[in-house]
Length: 209
Ligand SMILES: C[S@@+](CC[C@H](N)C(=O)[O-])C[C@H]1O[C@@H](n2cnc3c(N)ncnc32)[C@H](O)[C@@H]1O
Figure 1 (cartoon, protein in one colour):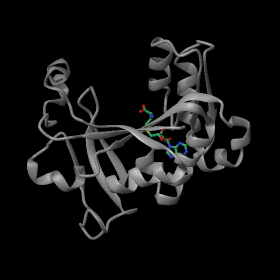
Figure 2: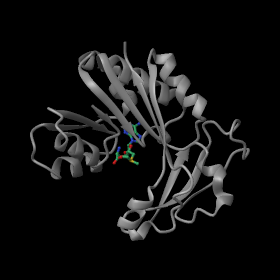
Figure 3: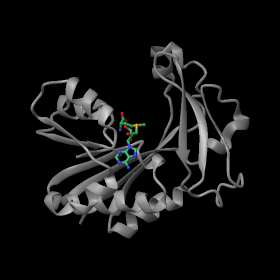
Figure 4: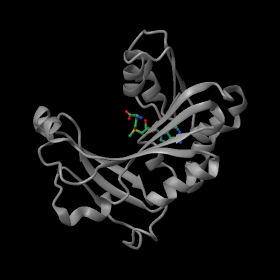
């Protein structure tokens, strides 16, 4: 299951890599329309629902999935909604299943002085990493074509992200700080302004025992 699936980019990659089926959920009807149009592969199904409303119907998804992913959707959610997303992921997984959370690196908005031109956020709130939880940071990112896109990011500390998994019952089984690799930067010249020296994203993996 892919929560906040957008136009289905991850779902298409999961089936290409061997997933027997993928169920994607997104709040945006436009994204779901694009996801459905992007492929007629019957292994993928998409539904338009908010993660919160979807949680009300969680019984129909109980212990159903081997893997649940949430790729860059937690950064749109406040703390309460984030906890709902993680609880829903936990209850929807089979025992032994894994939850994979990708989130922009929480330090990113506070790294502006490092001259990362391709990816930057303006710090709102107190300007304090610890006190800004649930504040919005507005930012600009480059897409793969080099087009600038305005984005918003709800701030969560790294500790807050970990705690949300533990609170749901997950054992945190994996963690990585991800950056744009030098080799990938060469493949995508439009991303030249993006620093390869600093982290961009975090990946946290929780296992259900
Ligand atoms: C940055 S996009 C990521 C899309 C996809 N996961 C990817 O990596 O290509 C964030 C997605 O989260 C969706 N989203 C935001 N809030 C949501 C919510 N409460 N419930 C479900 N989806 C939500 C947005 O509509 C958007 O498609």
